[in-house]
Image (cartoon, rainbow, N blue to C red; front, side):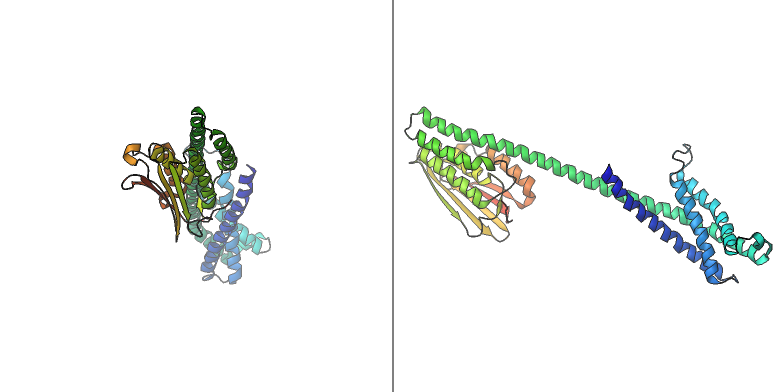
Length: 357
């Protein structure tokens, strides 16, 4: 409320300033027009017109907010225009009275009476139209201001909705990843594998590094590669004869921005849907390139392929695709294609933006 009040004060002062200049400009024109037929000095005639303009402006401003309530059928603009019409002859009389030394003797002079009448007449011709035009301009400016305010409010609400949706998708990724990783350890324990303890230790070390970053709003390619490498080393310990991997990162790509867990989601999908179902296992390759204003992340596997794995995106990839749309719009994409003779390839394209820790 205080912010609105502070912001409203300068706007009100600007409005008063514009109105004053507006009224003074037209009053000067009326005074110059009257000086053509007047025998008085031009400065005196213009000064009298300025006094009339000041009176008209005062009446216009007064009845803009007073009284606060009007009869239902009486429009405020009618009251304001009428007040200007009444204020003009009063202002003209006051102008002559003030410029003749505060003496009513000017009424005895024929030239003064003619000048007063002409000033009143010309002011009555122009002042109501000037007031009406000022109201139209003011309403148009107010409409534009309201439209801009509504647009800003709508933009802010849309941004908040996108942020909320992004947090929801991020929250879906976290338990999905953690449950899958813990399920891998449980499988080793259930089979009585002697490597279960070693794998569990590796998992603890990995989670200690990964979990603090789950809520990060942004990450870098370098951080994502570190997490993906740790995950693949963990999975390699679980199935050393069936999983091999290779990671290649072009120079300059490590510092680029990347959605948190994006690369890990692609790698985990390749392990679960490509390598795990395959009796022979396979190779997972990660290749990251910095191509001008684009960063391309390719995660391929030689597993069972799309058709045997179901061919769908799955929860993780579907959530990642929506996160990309929310975060980057059409400048990011995720494509999943088959690899001959068997396997799958996920290609993620991102705008090449510098990340921040």
